[in-house]
Amino acid sequence: MLRPTGRVVGIIKRNWRPFCGMLSKSQIKEARRHLFTPADRRIPRIRIETRQADTLEGQRIIVAIDGWPRNSRYPNGHFVKNLGSAGDKETETEVLLLEHDVPHQPFSQSVLSFLPQMPWSITEQDMKYREDLRHLCVCSVDPPGCTDIDDALHCREVENGNIEVGVHIADVSHFIRPGNALDEESAKRGTTVYLCEKRIDMVPELLSSNLCSLRSNVDRLAFSCIWEMNHKAEILKTRFTKSIINSKASLTYAEAQMRIDSATMNDDITISLRGLNKLAKILKKRRIDNGALVLSSPEVRFHMDSETHDPIDLQTKELKETNSMVEEFMLLANVSVAQKIYDEFPEFALLRKHPAPPPSNYDILVKAAKSQNLEIKTDSAKALAESLDKAESPAFPYLNTLLRIMATRCMMQAVYFCSGMDNDFHHYGLASPIYTHFTSPIRRYADIIVHRLLAVAIGADSTYPELTDKHKLADMCKNLNYRHKMAQYAQRASVAFHTQLFFKSKGVVNEDAYILFVRKNAVVVLIPKYGLEGTVFFEEKGKPTPRLDYNSEVPSLTVEDTTLHVFDKVKVNVMLDASNIQHQKIRMVLVEPKILGNDVPANLSTEISSKNEPEKKKKKLQK
Image (tube, rainbow, N blue to C red; front, side, top):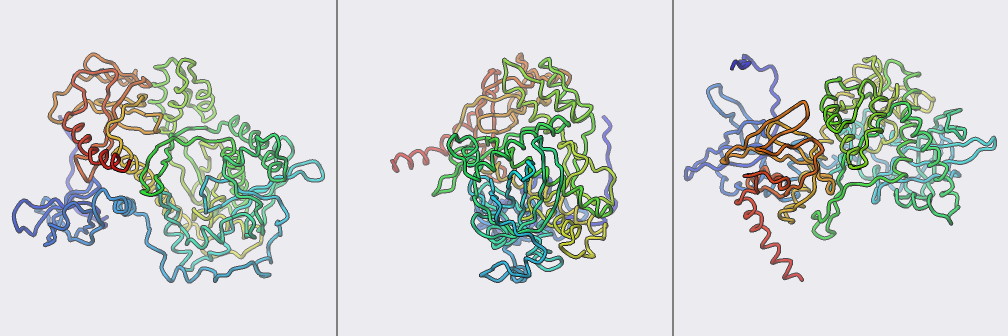
């Protein structure tokens, strides 16, 4: 069979960076030359010279490449730093941040020198272009334990019988001035990265958790977007103003929901929340009628042991009505601001778009639905949204969620862009002709730029020459898109690592799962209980390969005499495969339907149970 082949004739630019990984110690006694295996499987092994091989064995280390002689199979490099023992939580988190290029060093003195001096208070000068909105009944609604509160809301009836709704966003751009070291560091970081039990802030903590955070019962500087609406949630007037607010309550989603549902509570905050909730439902319905997509992805939350900080329980996140309430007003504010900055600066507005996927992306979804006698139409977002709503099976209530998770996988990435460098602004997922990010400036740099543009548009600030250079803005968007993508990958890797820790203490777990995708030699399954996805392989080294017959039309895979279809309910054994210390992985084996020769490998299950013996003994002693 002919294979496309090529030959490297020259290298224009090397993309070398320091690599994390582990030493593969040479078998030769007293040897100084060893091979280093990078954590990233795409990178070849690197030859290094070191006298510390004995102490570096079993450690995660950093190695840099020095050169790659043309006659050598491996590049040459040198040892840079020891990060700590493999498998250790701190070490693995460090590896994860380095491998995803997440800037996470402590903020330098030059960056911190641009922070306001404490004690800080609002001055006359600060009030110059601001409206005093401290009298309004403003409150914030966030996840539990949230300290970087970006947004707060208010809702009240006005004299003419209409409703006034305000979204108040932390005025981070007041503290971060263009071009200084603090601004440059925030621009480089691009986004806050949320790992399972750690947050890598985009801006120093004094701002993120204190001066910018819209905590309750303190005066805070905000940027407000205020609408006058009728009772059908139609916008009659929109205005933007820099403001000063004093939030009356910092609520969690659950607390806000409890107030809305309470028969006895009728205070100002609760009345405001009920008004917001009522309008949000109308806004959401209108958005969905316009073709916005509601896609679900199984997000996992870990419950940590308060002392050891090890994950003790895994749950998929449940969303309350109040999550949706906050989301609706954030989306509305983002759309209103996008329109305003584009009207004012058609050439250099920073916007966000979500391209429509090419039709072929949907093949897998359409075929999977067809196998259940359901039709999914994909000619527009509206057609997709409507057919997903109709795709229900009374006998199989979880089917709709599976289809939506599958639809998520067909999507393209949303990206930031400069309006003067592009002509397609449409946001496919939200079915909005224009969109931007305005509502989270504590954790996204894009929002800071949007705040600056909006401040100039309403005359609350002067124009910065940087903002009117569309090439510079386009470069900035490129960095922001890269940082957001890397943050997403780092977050996923953090969930994967914590999932491994969770199953390390569990041994072999038997769970119900559904088949999401079929491949030529494997099936991808989802375990609803944990929101966990994994691959069950039917080909293994050193074992006879079963007869496999893959049918891409039906989406099905026949293993020996058992046919597996997309959405079939199965049972799997889940365990941690720690045979390769550097690449530990969650392993899944099909137990129902039973397929001959596809059992848990004997060595793996004994390896797991012996690993758990000391744990069990320790627990007995503790009891």
